[in-house]
Length: 487
Image (cartoon, rainbow, N blue to C red):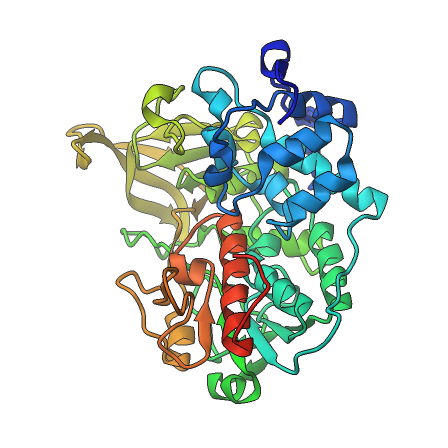
C-alpha cells in the first residue's frame, strides 16, 4: 500500500491544467496527466490504513490500495490488470468521476487525500499507449442472444461483460453514434470522444454488435431529448428475437421550469445546447445555438450547468451567470462530521475558473423578452431554514439574459420505453428492479432487466458502470444457470 512513510514525506500533487487563455480556444482536453514518476510518488502516499475505506467509497469497489502500490513499485502492467478487474472503462472515470473514493480516503481525515483519480488516469492512459488494452473475446459461444437498449456507460459495461462470457450481444442506440450522454452530454474539453471510439473497436472485436439510429419501444421521443433514429424496433420484436433484454437507456427527461415566459426563444434545456455542440465538434453539423456575444444564464449548479458554462465561454459569451437554488455551501467541509461520506462543500470546476458569476439561494420567477425572444429574467433571493425555503421579501432583482439554459437535472427515463415492455415503475417513474436477493436487476417483465440511471435515477458514470457489470452477472446467471462474472 505505497511507502509506509510516504504520506508523511510527500504532498499531494494534483494534475495541472493548460492556461485558461489557451484552452478556451479549443474543445480539446486540457488536463495534463501526471508523469510516471509523479504518479509513483502519489501512489507512495497511500497509507497502510488497515481498512481501505476508499474501496467502499468507490461505487465499482476499485481495489485502490493495490494499484496505488503497483504504480509506486513501477509495475504498471499489473496495475492496469487490477484496475480493469473492477472497472471496464477507467479512462472515463479517471476523467469525469467526482472521486468519492478520495472523500473516503483515510488520509483525508486530517490531510489531503491520496490523488486516486489522477493515478487511475495515468494507469489507463499508459496502458493504451503501451498496447496492454486488447480485446478479450470469449473462448466459446453460448448461443444466447442479449439486447442492450442504450449505449451509455451502463449499457456498454453490461455488453462487454456478457460478450466476454460468450453471449451474442447487440447494443441499440437511437442516436447516430455510440456513447449516450458520455458522447453527447459531456463536452470534449472534459472527455474527448476518441476514448469511446477505441473502446467500441475493442468491443466489436469481442463480438458486440452496435446498431445506431434505432429507437426501441416507442417511435417518438419526448421534447428536449435527442433522437436521430431512422428505424423503429418494437418491444415485442426485441423480446421475441433475444433471450434477454437489458434496458440501460438512462434518465433522459429534463427537469423543466414552468414560469411565465418559458416559451420565449432563447430559453433551452441544457442538452439542447450541449448535444449539438458535441455533434459540431465531431463534424456532424453546426450548433444552431450560439452564445457568442450573448449574456448567458445557467439555472442549476451541478456538472451539467458547469458544462454549459465552459461551452458558453468557448463560444465567446459576453457574460455567464449561474444560479443555484440551494444556499452557498461551506468552503471546507467538517471532516470529523462527514468522513468517509461525500461532503457538501463549495466545488469550483475548471469551467467556473474560466469565467462565471455564481449566485446561490436564488429562484427564477419569470422570463421577459422582446419580439418573442428572451432579454432577461426576474429572480428572488431565498432563505433556507430547517430544510425549507422561503422567498425574502423585497429581494427581487432582474438579470439580463439573451440565452437561458436549464441544467436542473433529469427526472426519469422515457415512460414510453418502460410501458412498451410492460415494466413496472417505481414512485419516481424509474424501472422498478431490486439489487438485493434473487433476481437482481430483473423487472416485472419476463426476461427484461434494467440497469443504470433508468433504474436508479440520475446518477454518476461510475454508478452506471457498476450497475451494468452487476446486471450482466444476473443476466448470465439467468441464461446459463450459473456465472463466472464478478459481482
